[in-house]
Each structure stands twice: as C-alpha cells, then as structure tokens.
Length: 280
Picture (tube, rainbow, N blue to C red):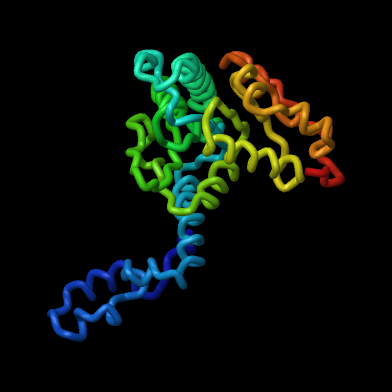
C-alpha cells in the first residue's frame, strides 16, 4: 500500500541541505535568502506567534501518536516537595512533612505503570511536568515499573533540567503554558493532584473548570492529601456562597494513599453528562 504521506515533490530536508552547501556570497548570506522554515530568527518574530502555537500543539501530538500512546494518567504537584531522603533540606517543616507525598506519587506511578505495561505502554502512561519534586517521583515510579512516562517541561527564567527518569523520546519542552496544559489533558484518563504551589493550583483549577463547564468529559479527579487541600482551599465556602454548586464538590475525591487512588480509577463510573453549564 502506498504511503499517503509520501510526496512526489522534493523533500524539504533535501533543500535545506542543498541551500546550506551553496558558496558564500552577499546574497546567500543574507537573512532574506534563508528558507523560511529553516530561519530561526524569522520563526521567532512576533507575527509568527500563531505558527509557533500550532507547532507546539502539533509536534508532541505527532510523536505521542507515533509512539502509540492512547491514554495518560496525569500527575500535577509541587516541584519543591522533597524526597524522604532530602526532607531535612526543606525550607519549612511543612514542606518536609509533605515528603510523604513524594513517596505516594512514586508508588502510585509504579502501580499505574504496571497496568500500562500490560497494554504495551499504550494506556495509563504517566505524564508529569518533567521537573523535580512530585514530577520526578512520578517518572521514577514509572521507570521502576519498567514502563515509559511523559514529561511536559516548560522553559522558565531559571531553567530546570528534565528529571532523569522521563523517557527520553517522550521528554517535551514548551514555550507556551496554554499549549502545554492542553497536552496534559488531551489524553488524560485520570488527573491526580498532589500538594503544590501556584503552578499546581493553576493546573488543578483549569482542569476542574473544563470538567465543570462540560468542555471536557469527566475523568477520575483525585486530590492527594485531604488535610493539605482543605487547609489551603475552603471548598465548602465556595458552595455555601453559591459561586459553585454543591454538586461541583463531587467532581473530585480526596485520598491519602496510592492504593486509594488506584481503587477509584479501577472502579470509575462517570456520572451522566451535564445538560446545563453551572455557575462559577
């Protein structure tokens, strides 16, 4: 069968090589002469932002599809949460105590990846933000179970290297937060949120909003650390004020252990789809 991706036209890579081999002259050295798709300065112009957005959406999508990954289990959580071995270096006592969730994230990812391996690493693939803390724990657990895991990193002013447990050819880097968050959710079979800071809160609330408003179908939405989350956010006060519905409190579940989270995912039975968009 003919590969429909094959073109009778000359390959773009061939022309890029050919153009790079031309003798140097004022014309060939001019930025105007560079092939548009090979001109980094051109691609970084403000006017090319729509193209860059499209590229960031398309590149990971194609690579994940080629790898055969059909569903993910998303782990959101703080980059500053230390492993138990490093909790004595934490900046606060509370942060040190939260190291237990590093271990729970690691254990949970290992259990999920054991399920993933049975599917040929196509389903239940762990996806994290690719950094340290809870993210590292998730990728580590997947690595220990002999599976693969995804890392969706983001370029920050103080650059963080991807943790060493992300599967190398599934380690992505983003410029746009919005496109990164889309990739987190596009294949999500479950969303698990561990204690964290602004970034974790942003990811959690955007995901909840998409589910609450019917823009995303319901999936298991699990918050690790009931004491932490009920201290940080007065969920009941939001319902009492009427800014969310009482039913919105059923969009997520609290757990403290990996085993509880696995049980929720294994026994997941989504509620009927909503017909009305609730108040926010």
